[in-house]
Length: 57
Image 1 (cartoon, one colour):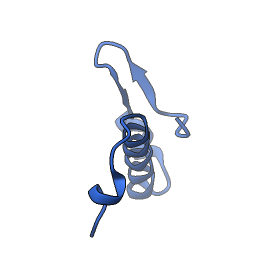
Image 2: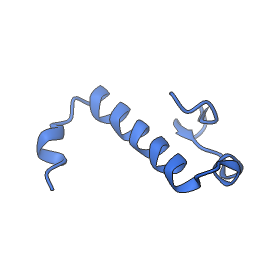
Image 3: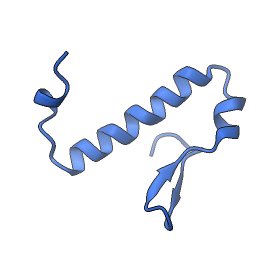
Image 4: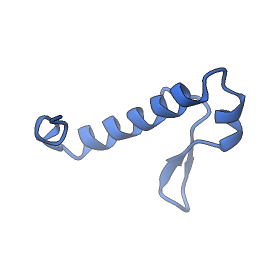
């Protein structure tokens, strides 16, 4: 993960981003969106998703 504040929770089996990290960020919206984009890309790439079809606008 490129977001150093993100933690992997073994019990949940997923990465989490603590609310405090988002609140402390100078730009919380951008910070959260970056984390969500990063986790989406990781899942899509590891799952070999057809991103071109999924990401049509």
